[in-house]
Length: 406
Image 1 (cartoon, rainbow, N blue to C red):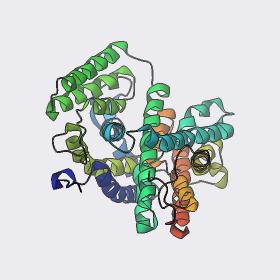
Image 2 (tube, helix red, strand yellow):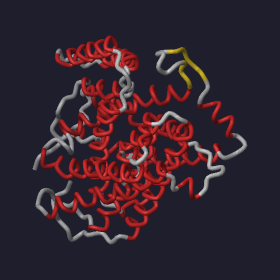
Image 3 (spheres, rainbow, N blue to C red):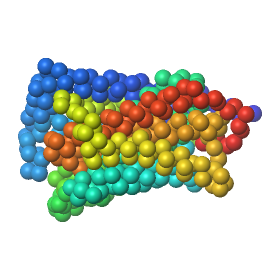
Image 4 (cartoon, helix red, strand yellow):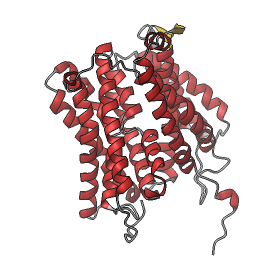
């Protein structure tokens, strides 16, 4: 029997994220609900003035003076994307996505869960050319929100499903990052883009020369963020690029080794992101006035396309791809999970709150369309959360199943 030192069995960053992310997801729900309540109260004007208050200089003519909203969406969310990038790198190098056998089912499910919602969106709203830019809005999954709903279920949701949901969301985030970089990039400033590339290469060189001190990477990451902001590529992409340059050391039995720079930074960011940055983003972006909202407004092409993409497209795409993959022998079903529970998790993937709102803000700048996006995202995410919770709450478990754990 192998004795594993206690220092090598500390709680991994993924398990830490599952625990803090659950609480953070619940906090995100509260923040979003509070934003909607305030936006429909006597404090609505105060909320709007606060979100759009100018509190900084003009960093780039494209954005104008920095407001609270811009600092949150272009600044704080870059830190969120930094954590996403760290998690992606760790999982692909030394985690639950480190082999192709582990990657197969999450990657297939995530791909189908992005493609089918986009098709449904375009089928509903694609007839209006001005709305086609929003095709990617229902393609995202909000890991914090979804894990928060799972947390409410306690032991009724097998650990394998929580892990599967997390890995699908991680792959989903990769797709969202690629979509933002390719499809939501404005006219490029080639000089700034070259500067960003040079800074990133410097970070990679530091990694190559085994520099494990974090402060040079963080300093260069800040410069990378500013150069990316000036380049026309969305500044949050800098967070992911910076994450890929952070040194990482593979370790047997201990993916969170104390001397790994990536893990030290990841552990330092998990709670601030879960408990501060994501709820702040939710509060700043979920506030939508429902005054005068009618059934006709809810069923207008833009909000309806987003709602149906999230609520219908996600569950169809993800569950069908999982069912086909398992029936064809491509992958195994999550351990101790019944088909009903797998379907419940597929429905929960329709919670697209944070990333969907973020992409919606990039796709549509007008206030009318912005409110329609918020309504669609809120409706689709809420329906997915309620139905997914109900399915998992009453679905029988399948403890007899002993397929390979995912």
